[in-house]
Image 1: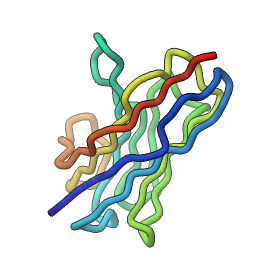
Image 2: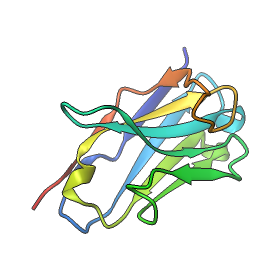
Image 3: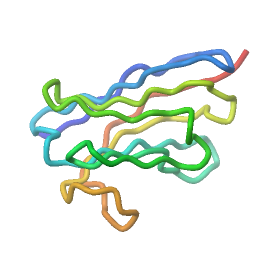
Image 4: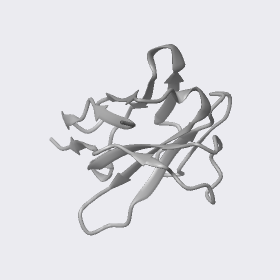
Length: 123
């Protein structure tokens, strides 16, 4: 069974930080690109960040650039999203996804998805 499990969500005050984790089982992340997505109620799903399978190239949505950092630890089979300077607008369900094609082109489909973890930014 191939599975991605997110964790680390919760309630945080504006300006605070959280680290989300995405643990893969049934496959290794070495050959997969990992994307982090988010979706708030009534809004479209947004890709917030992506890291290539090599881990050497990353990209970010303009809305999170400079505040979020994506990383990948292949030895632990885990990807992370470090979120700093959080804003209420960041409130959403956050999902990690894996692409076997291994790059972060917007045309590359994500093959596997986690169930999500909720991040709520509120005072």
